[in-house]
Length: 317
Ligand code: SF4
Image (cartoon, rainbow, N blue to C red):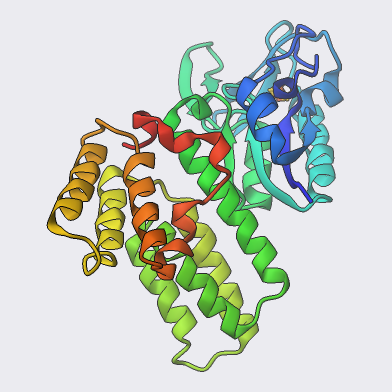
């Protein structure tokens, strides 16, 4: 069964924008769509249909936000809030793996919706009305904007989070203490590439020295795992992981092979070559010398290789 992802309708090519246009997104429609079923939403279209006057967020004297029509100045907060609740209820009926929003929208922008003062001056940026509701309802669910997904590093991080989240949800269905230990083991390097200290905390949860019930352990593990995969990787963290993986091969490689592998890791960290190069070399040697511990790691292949996100030197920062 494909993953379900809720997506702003305009990104799916639906003509729901204020001007009856759309903002079809190529990555969403042509690449990620191979692996996901999309659930669309558009609170503005539900509330005001189209075409409609555009709207904006305005800061009240008490710092709260309201929604105003750009044409008439009418307060449309209640109508948009009501439609957003309906869309929220609808997407919540699905077992979602992520939400992808349209950037800069007063409804769908994640921290990118412009906010104005009553006098028309700019007052920074904030979450759109629907985004604020989604964050409250699904605090651990992967969420991203299409604008940010144009950045190779943010795209790679989001896709890894998405597939890792999905892997946990599938794992959870038949989870036992034994396979939790196994799940943690195969996710070691993926988690370390995100957050070393959360990886260690997760290890303590699995160790269960306080003899908690499995339900309690699984709940704690889920919270920390989903928090860890939401963190962004960095050149430094990924380099440490690659060096650590190379350590598992040191007894098999001659000095020339070791030097070549370390050069590839250095070149990756210097953003001369993409991550796929040292990873392919590690995989080649792990296969040759049957180092199953490495081959089983989700970090080797956290999402379908066809997405080719690790082939871009800009996919790290
Ligand atoms: S940004 Fe959100 S509210 Fe605006 S047209 Fe797209 S889906 Fe609808």
